[in-house]
Image (cartoon, rainbow, N blue to C red):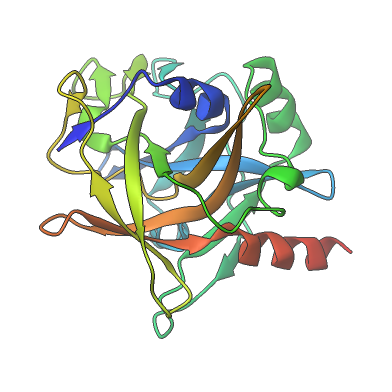
Length: 254
């Protein structure tokens, strides 16, 4: 599969898409896995949006007393000798979730505390404004998925607690498939030969699915859904509509 990494659209949304680094230990051995996520603003509050199954993994590790911390980063993260960031970790208590194993909806969010918000802003992270996820046009010519495939994550050193992590942010162009189940379905359209070759997109879970429209004064982007799962053999992805989670968060705060 070929993913595009250098598109102008990627650069427009890149400052809002984060890698969710999950740092844990099993039998005293250091482990690091990752997912994708992005901050949105709801009533002035920053929330990290990701997939519900990512939140469930974090909860399972915490219950087993294996979770060290959850960190947010972008394409490069510097760490200390224990594999920790200088900025505050993400607090993972009391997530807001939508969905269960019966209806398959896969949406969740963590409240981002003020100290971490300040650190993210200092690193030029931009939260997706309400106007860019609530008032969404009905139709787009093209849809896109942006995230960090775990296959492309590089740790230095490669074993033990790293001192730095590099990740590649990749863009996939999607063709929406109309369905009646209330979820977002699309096929993955391969990018140009100059793109980045990957065999799987694990790590992109929680990444934004968005549409873009060109106007006289430039391109505007709306985030539509959150990536949930993919079918490698059929090159199809499934996501859930962000507005459903945003509305729940807004009701909680009102």
